[in-house]
Length: 255
Image (cartoon, rainbow, N blue to C red):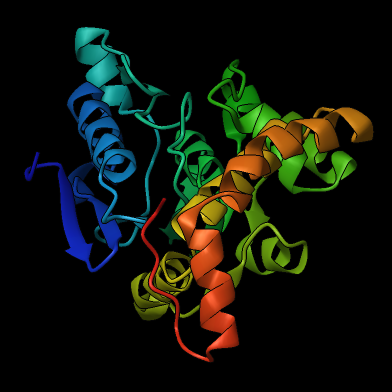
């Protein structure tokens, strides 16, 4: 795994770095499987509460490795998490994407599969698939319409033209815009802020947002109740109340 994907633990945060700068961090099948395995580690380890996903070098990710596809016909689809090792089934725990360079096609779809985005100044985002006779089928057409106003998402998808990071930040798709050298640290700071909170509550909140997007209000509220009831009954909920009353930091157990 170390050859094409690096993982590093920063306390409760797992930092995942795509490490194929000679291919602009493009994803081939081994890299997709390695990314899926890293996300399995994130979800399966109670000591880990959030992740940062970034890339080595000057580019976050160029998407699918077209050279590998042309040479062998392989597609970077992991058995457990689908395309590119993340877009079919993102982790249950929050992931902060730290991106830079030209974040296009599958690389953009990976960023959209994350929960927050920290972008370097000068980054550009795009889904140019229609320019190549393709469709942004790795979650791009679905998730972009959830992150941007309807007509702007359609403009990007139908023209294939890019969106500058500064404009994406104005529209709320990018959470934080920073100089390139600050991307990793800023993403890590956000992930640590998430990891400091009650893990059951964080996971439930992400689940609610993810699973109620297409539901009507009454159905969404009913579904929310099934997710939040176990959290209210948890030891962490009682600990949070006690810590507030005692004016101290809570000690989360994740149960």
